[in-house]
Length: 229
Image (cartoon, rainbow, N blue to C red; front, side, top):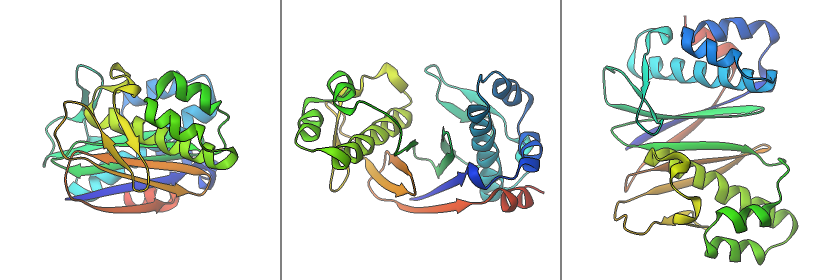
């Protein structure tokens, strides 16, 4: 099973490219973007959804503006009347966005800044499974911070892939590292987990499948806009 992961660094987007990226979105997406209180968050949302639309068109044809979306009961978005059974996940952080697309397989993707300020042990004790908290407690400094964000991004990607979001407690399953894998009580399905460092960001991908081939591509806004024409 092939998974396409595309990332886009916002630092490389020229100021005059933002209107063209916003034009790729539909009215509902532009309205939602306008509701963000901070410009950085608005831009991240616009970039992520423009990247998703262009990537879908590259994979399945059609114009980026023509894709239509709906949301399942717990909020997981899906395509309306796609030409093939494409599943996707979107993530945006200040400075970087990413999308993951696969055919017929539920996936989740998450990105987080590595330099984000976080009290890792307090958060782990509140949200993580005991085995994960014990792992972090045995580490210090940068090693603890890196392990924390590796686990955090993988957990976020898991609940995106299941479609449950934060209705599933993050302590209800356990992430293991080296290599990344997961144990989830009462779930006998096969799962694949991947984690990467992309510059100053942690990037995680999770899919409900036994085998996959993952291609990670770093996009540039100029090429993205050329592809959309």
